[in-house]
Image 1: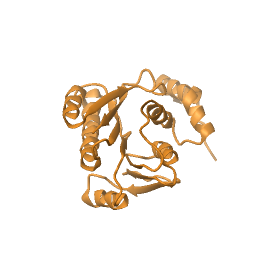
Image 2 (image 1 turned 180 degrees about the horizontal axis):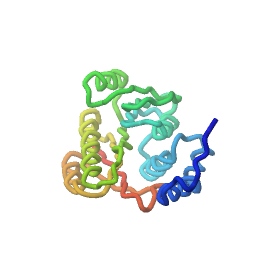
Image 3 (image 1 turned 135 degrees about the vertical axis):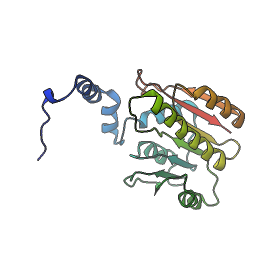
Image 4 (image 1 turned 120 degrees about the horizontal axis):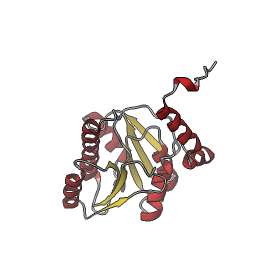
Length: 210
């Protein structure tokens, strides 16, 4: 039996977060359309603008749990394409998505991902990865930059010319340097702030084409 949480036990910030979440248009829309998280609409908007993921493509989704980006990608590539998702955390099964649990930095996990790719080329790498935040920028921002660097390294390893990386970034210390480095490795790097991304959020999404 669920236990009710009395409002008086919650801080003002917790109450505000709960109210924002309950009232959130995209949270309601995700529930209505069967997506696992509101983040699905960020990728949908990015894809609508850039026309990146198409039927029959091969997509690798890094840090995929709980799976909303994999859901979107799976629907877009269809049965003729494939989505290979990976996360340290477990993820429930999805149609047209193959999940590998583990750290993609480890050789055995990377080998499993590439074995699934097989003779096909990777068309798009997705990364909605973010660290568990502590609330301290001096700690959280370097962790986020590190995750971005890992996604970039992976993308440079697997993407051919014309392949695309879609990656979440937290604007702040280290992003200018990261972008300059990416501009030397990719033919094009664009920034997109989807409407479904909360205005107060410092997240931005970079679309980098090799």
